[in-house]
Image (cartoon, rainbow, N blue to C red; front, side):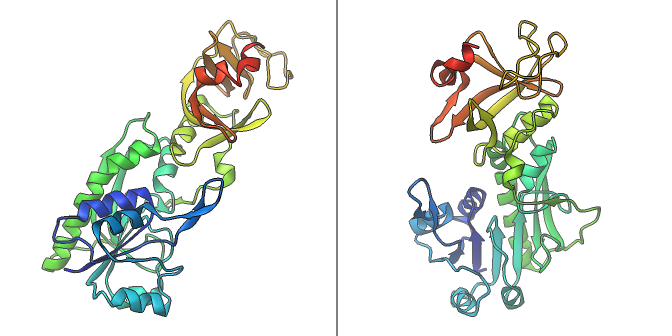
Length: 322
């Protein structure tokens, strides 16, 4: 069976590598065009492109898969099936009509259809995740299902760790589907249950709302790590938070402090949401709606990631001295 593979994100790269040295190693790889990244904005290739070229596979990078020229180029490799995983764009209807198309999706559909299933599941505090191989249709992740695999992750896992836990299941599921498709034994089951949608992470989704509960805040932080980053304002600067944990608001903390010295009058050992407090010169806590969140790793605008102790020895000295 001749397989074409479409993917862009790191999760797709892992699944692509899982097809190497199998009967389903792709004959062609489709990925997004190189995009500007970094401060200089120089175009950088998707990781899938790098892997495919290292393997000696032909790579296509159309702006839109489904345009006649892109489709003709894809079909020139005579694929029997297209496997899409974290591709990052809509596959045109012309492609769907030209050959069978599968989606490898990191959720248990119809739960979390859409662009950011793992991130949305972690934001919601879920620990039962999974992967699904389904038939691609014009509707987003609405097709019939061939294979599913459930995967448990801990409540402490960030998105990177969750994707890593899902990868072996995804590789196993797609190989099983391709084998069944080749043998003519694949069984398609229509999705059942109320769908939920995993919208792309927007800028407003990244902002920490300190009035929320501590665990809810931490769930958002880990859902956006290590690739996006939750954000807050600290010492007048936009700051990314990469790791955090729930913590009690320490009894020795002045209960009325707030980032700008406002909001006095909280009850003893209670935190004002968003109020920072330094414990022992090395721990950084923020008041939450029910206790506190300890920030373990953060990144100032234009700076590098650092743990809280490093931050407090440097830029955070003024905060520690308050």
